[in-house]
Image (cartoon, helix red, strand yellow):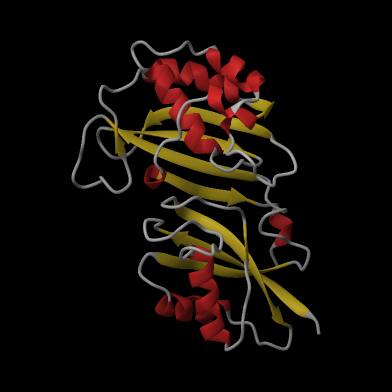
Length: 255
């Protein structure tokens, strides 16, 4: 039987989930979306996501693909509307688009973009998504350190141990802190061709250590990268302030 492949663009608040990928000991975003698709199409519909997110991590846009028999009359607009009627309030499908049969949500991606949010003081209105830091770190110092992340490096020092990844080499094309649109908050923006498990949270934790008044030097990032040792980097920050912003693909995968 011939199949047609589709991309889902999924947004979610991660607080209630153990992460994107199915887990034996908790409810994942993948599981909830697959169950909703199965209700819609009245048969099991497995999906493949662009990557993993940890527990509590959020996504503005996480693509995933699924296949349907070609004899199924495509109606992405109706499917999207119906899915959002089935899904809980903290998961939303932005769109469904047909793609070429060889397109892959994970392996066809060319760039991933994450954002992490911190605040100068505690705020009752954004406390679920922003981490207050007191005393507030030296942003200029953190930005000097972030520039050493640019380029192609082995990020073993910023990776969770004992993962099944084939390589810890990543190419980072953007890494900087800047004020966000919400008053008193700052965002760390980082883009790369791929990310390791826990990598962004470990990078942010290390930069915050550097930004302290008595913190290590910005140039220490070089030594941390070269050490290829997780214990050399800073502690991982909490997940609820981390957002997968978007994933980029070649234009020619879309039909």
